[in-house]
Length: 98
Image (cartoon, rainbow, N blue to C red; front, side, top):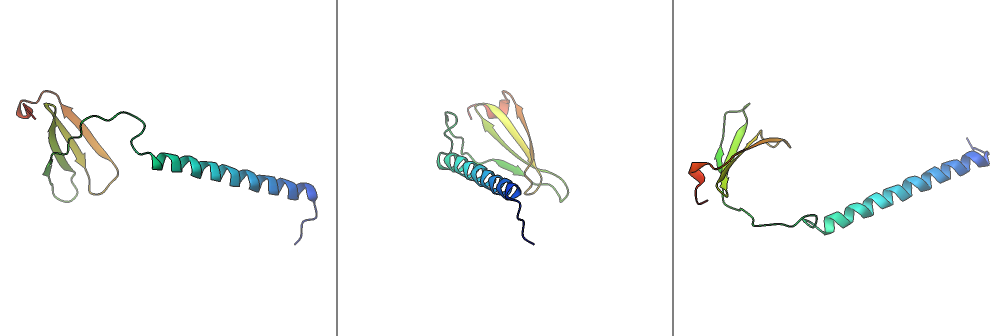
């Protein structure tokens, strides 16, 4: 079925052009961030020391722990899920000098 209403056709073309423009702007904006990783804040020393991993039976969260500047960090995670719980024990005596 053909639409002979020029006003409706113009509105549809304008809406299509607006969507195309917004999509292009979003893609170009995202590319800039991908091209400049870690450019949003200064970075200090990286702690690449291995963590101790505590694995629990299926159905329970696993835990990773390590020392950083005298503090103990705990991260509880569940499988490959995108969430985790983080806690810090300040001035942990087992982390002296690490």
